[in-house]
Length: 179
Ligand SMILES: Cc1cc2nc3c(=O)[nH]c(=O)nc-3n(C[C@H](O)[C@H](O)[C@H](O)COP(=O)(O)O)c2cc1C
Image 1: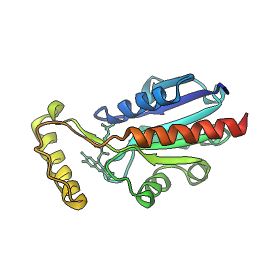
Image 2 (image 1 turned 60 degrees about the horizontal axis):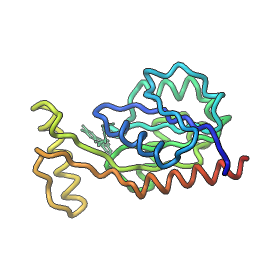
Image 3 (image 1 turned 180 degrees about the vertical axis):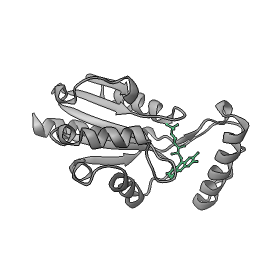
């Protein structure tokens, strides 16, 4: 077995990306560290592989993650580098678009894997205003995907273990090829 040191660096607004990061770490096993960006003060060059995870709001990832990727683009692109999004869209072209729109061009081109793991709306934890906005978004998503409209009270989660497992396999394959 090849043991590589993987860093998963994520941002989250409501917790879905944090859940995705934890599930990816479990799927990878081995020597994997998971850090929320604001708590990470380490050096990416110490890792064999770096994975960045972020939520998507109106086509954009959090500004903090954008800035981090811009400022550390050189170091990140020297590593096997992959990106996942916690977002509703799973259309490959749309997800590639999120990558290109939010990361520096050179870094986006380096990503050996890029995937949406699905998203989540934690209605049980939102305030009234957030609930109203999220309910509207979830309803249009349900309509577009031909699924029954969620009630907007219980949590709505589309995070997919299959997608996470497939992404983890890509990382393991890449690590094997680089070993
Ligand atoms: C206001 C709003 C805008 C959103 N915009 C998008 C979008 O442009 N594309 C998408 O695929 N998902 C979109 N989503 C879904 C979020 O990406 C999804 O809920 C994600 O899991 C949030 O992750 P977090 O809990 O880590 O913040 C949107 C959600 C909200 C509430």
